[in-house]
Image (spheres, one colour):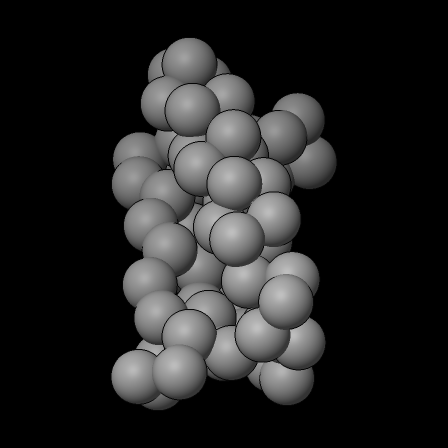
Amino acid sequence: MDRIQITATFSDIPPDEVAAFKAAAAEATEIAKGEAYVLSYNWFAVNDEETTFKVLEDYESSDAVLTH
């Protein structure tokens, strides 16, 4: 089994859209929690202004990434 890790950065989110972005990230996290092949799925703000976020995803295989 080949574990796959993905890191994505979402930059320059307009301040007036941060709340909607965070809500979408929370929804995506809840969906990922229900997928048995997702080993971890974590969002975090990179800066104090919360205009840049990263998501760290960890899957059990490349097939799991494609299924997600």
